Length: 511
Ligand code: ZN
Image 1 (cartoon, rainbow, N blue to C red):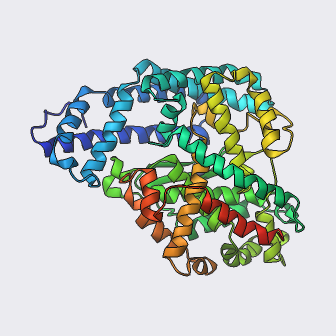
Image 2 (cartoon, rainbow, N blue to C red):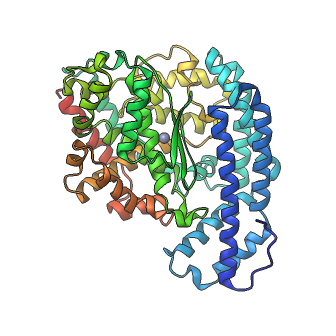
Image 3 (cartoon, rainbow, N blue to C red):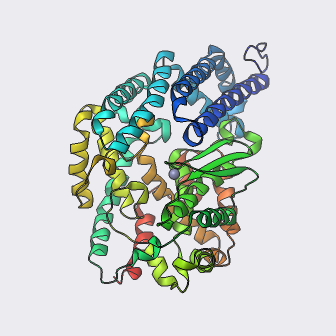
């Protein structure tokens, strides 16, 4: 493949050339994904510097190709044609999104792109050490560089009111900080009283059932079984073990998820696998014929996260799911679960209580962890908060939001990998994901009668089919805000998530 093909003469051939270039860039990007996956799974520790060079070189090559002025000419030709007449046609959507990508990419100088990739690749290693030793000073200079580079990126991209908007737009296209703040404020206002009432509730779960003996090989088999039951195709994917679980869609036929195991705690691997499988099902369900173009891509990180959180929480923590899976679990872990009462087990996996680690947080308090990060990211980016003051600011606000004192930075501001990747403007997408999940799920229950009855029989195809039709199969046809309106008839709000939390937790906690 080459980018120096003869100049196309017709509109159709210009469009085809645009798609060819888009596919090439996607394939190069997927090669980077393999390198990232290997870095997190099997690369020996000393390979880090060379891997950073590989990733930097590839990022530079992709950037060079994507800022080729020929893209601009092809786009202009297509935009002036009949191809964009019907805004929801495949052609119009591809042209719209490729224009967006081209405009963003051409605003970034190559130096900044390369410096960002190199810095973030190396800063991850600094973060691993800092977190292990709970020593923020080892990560601080790297985070300072990444904030500075992120600010530069935002300035290159431009923004109307807030530099955060320019960064958020990378992960959640077309979303704004103002709108997210409004939705989060509404959510927080309802969430805090729910969490407080639960804290004083008469019925308490007994979590000890989850910290009994869960041999790792048995967990591997059990997680695999659950992933397969909800639709993960092992001919097109695999599960590996890592410190920080993630999902990577390399392209058609190759979607990889990762998890981590704790032999004295079932939740980590099990709900982690359900979560990452949710991401994988989205990638596996994207229209293959549009691979390498916007029509074959996911809408946004918030919509991606809605898929993972739906399978993890709305399905994986539901009574119907465990009606089928608890007897299976008791067979797999007889020492821990023989004779376990389903009500007790279900309450244990739905424990709501403030905790330090975001990825282990329950469905309700989780969102306060995101509010914290959303506020701090904005403060660091605007310069209101110096990076050196991050630990103190984190601990203070954490106490205000969750009511518990952070014991050390490992369980505080060093817990997440994302900032070391340079993902600033990213965390909001997690709570957006919870909100989208709740609203989509409420609609799925209306559209598919007996949806949860099928879970109890171990059949998840009705839900997967609904998601395939309404979300996965649509690629980027609609923007996130349009998609939620089209599927549920309403704009995104906090209402369905709040109703879900109340309906689930109030009876469980005797409220
Ligand atoms: Zn996720």
